Length: 214
Image (cartoon, rainbow, N blue to C red):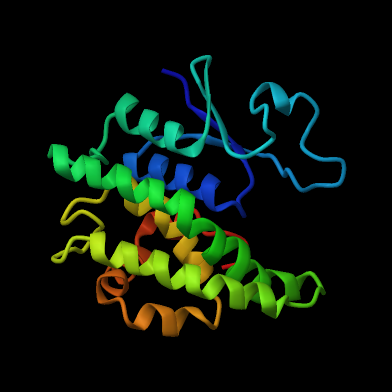
């Protein structure tokens, strides 16, 4: 099989989730930089790969995909390497539940509101919107509390001893969020999440896919 290609930007947490999955599976791949926020928008023709003009997009042997969850599931099933879904029906259901929570309830307050406003906006010479951060904090507490309750009590990963797609989906968002000053206080009351982040942040795959902000 040919080397798969991932289309997207290194700054994107969703692109990084796909890259982490490829690295953890040991899959050689190519990253084609696509910046959807560039002047003039994404490259001409990118809409044929992703009609909603989001990142990442993916191609392998002529098979094209978009949506991060679909890409990471395909990578896990199509390539050799350590499985990234647990064998138990209930553990797999838990992974899917955590993935849905991350996309629906975690990404926006932790990344789009807290990280972007506290860490990214100042680097762009723009003022932080404190009201936006204040509004995000209750949502952040709720989402982190939900993950704390669902994460396996013994760890070190989301569903126990085995690394899964849930860990690789959340880790890029945690890497951004923990750069914000608000993160320490929010994380301090969640020991399972703290233990999980300690296990994730030093993995070689995290270093190999480090975002520019790190």
